[in-house]
Image (cartoon, rainbow, N blue to C red):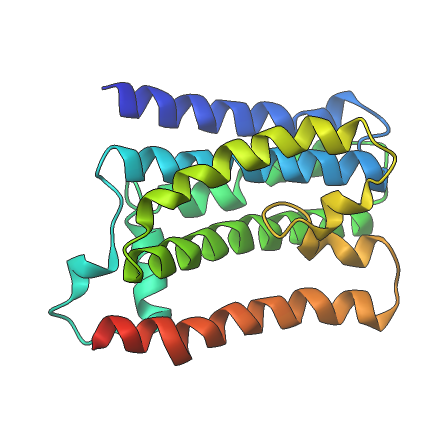
Length: 211
């Protein structure tokens, strides 16, 4: 019962945070947007850690008897997280609130929406990868350290002038680097990160799991 209440509360909080894009005219300024992105990612991480702590998280070991590729396995676990397709809905539906803002043109809304979806998915994908790595090494309980570390860093960075740290944070901001500049370098980094995490899974983690 408590698990359901927490997951519903997290979904409500994520929706509430996205509503800032309607309530605050300066929410789309890069320093404010990236803070919101980091905060939202924190709650996605919290949702997964709640499942882990309640022993409801779908580990790779549940699929040991099935010859599933990494891609198929990661999608299957996201599909079955908490309630069927719940996590996909949480990734894609709340950012729609961005389109209800009247402060920026429609084409920019599409950009922010796309970046939000990509960052939400990357945060979840990276956390699952990290947990699988810890599990292989028998360090899975170390995943709990991540939440207080990120929670403590948010107000610290918020009160400093070095907001670039929010963009560097892989659990919340790094996929949004194209907002800093149209330089091809800032576009390649997010793409390279997705590819790197995927290759790490397919070439190392998945093979370790199969063996």
